[in-house]
Image (cartoon, rainbow, N blue to C red; front, side, top):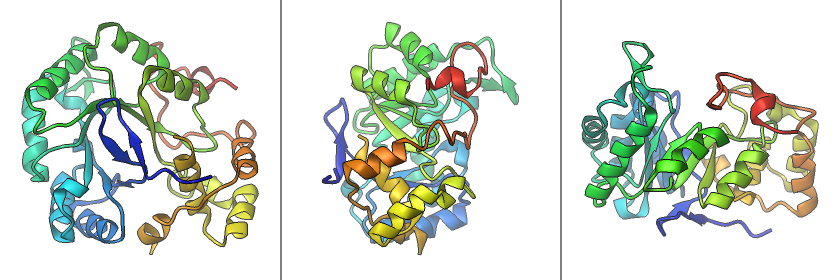
Length: 284
């Protein structure tokens, strides 16, 4: 199957399907990682205020020499910043020093204050303030979206939203295919994007016999197969950027991993009913 290089957001913007995630990278580490990634063909960089490395990401973008207009930059609003969206947005811009943000996400529908849940603040108000910033600053933020949203949370959001999220970024891999959520997002025109496509650190997917068999057939790594699998769905950085065209039979084999193998690398999505666990979020 031909590999799409971009996906079209509901704003009309083209977002590169392959991006470099920067979670767990320090400011010092991330600067070189971003520079190397951009020098070797990546055009989408993903960070967050909560990663504490936006400054390094911005420096890496400048050091790469790649024109800013050729780069798609995603960052995320931190949980303690739900009450101060305007100030948080200006802080993003200052730390990144990249002129503008292509995609700004609400990292979690989980306002926090003084290190605990802020139960007096509704995240719907956060989205309203994000909408206001987007409408008033389209030269500084090109699209807004969400992250870690389950179907119940998206349903609640869409009842009042003036702007439909362009993206919902969630944990997504063969052991957590999020099929119900995927269909819902497609129906609503929201692009579902994947974090932890390898299953995170020391993932059992990297040693899965089926994945290794397909990788051997293509003469590549298990990581390349797992990342290529996500793209087929609407040194390591350099190696992972080389996507592989998978056939329908191979895609069906990878799909069969779940539910025999099922796990989460991160916490469950917000469901609107507390932490119900995987089976309540993901229908088998």
